[in-house]
Image (cartoon, rainbow, N blue to C red):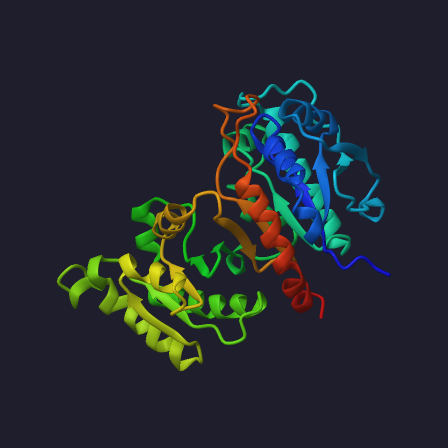
Length: 338
């Protein structure tokens, strides 16, 4: 009988950061094996060092490809790229940046062959990949380009139990993010949130648009964006069949979503949604990339060079990312492989 657990590829991230450590700790925790078959992609020697450093009970097993993965508990099955020789923990290193990108390139090639069911990425360092000569701003853009998906159609979302936050803009200064927001962009964003919410199994999504200004602008007293840009966008999205409310004051909308009033919130800028989710549960917040042919999940923290190699990193976020990837993989694949 075929194994019903999805096959999830896990990249080790920047080998000079805490990625290998949280990967090892998350698999050593054990619950992932109940939900998925993990295929680690990275440098086996780096992972062996992490196993020893963490005192983990995992057995390292090198495999030649996804077809060899058994998903046996207690076993770290790795597609060994042997690409991080000489990298030291805690140091910005172009070699580490190149190794991290090569891991992502490898899993994307597997995805193009329909050989895996989902991706979980460990943190990479933007400076390191730029020093290695790669132009990608981060994982999201890299995955989109490598999988042949227009960047504009890919959305980042946070998932924390019933709280689902989508982001209209990503890595921009606050001033630039506000300048980018217009009615057309917001309508397109609301339509995309509706589509992607259905992709992850929400049959009739109830969406809220977060306001930009305090108290949703107080009818123009505290800013005009709600009246001029956001309210018209909500009206147009409703006309096009999207069940959307708002703009809802940002100091209330995320709580209301978590309580079940809405199924998803469209956040206008990076920190608006990040602060809300991470204050509730920093390590339980999982970042997912939607709009790709398969699910991608990740912790939402960085490489933490300051503690890399000290074996004190918290892996709860990685455990949560593996769980969310396993839960969402069947929904995303069902739509993308029709």
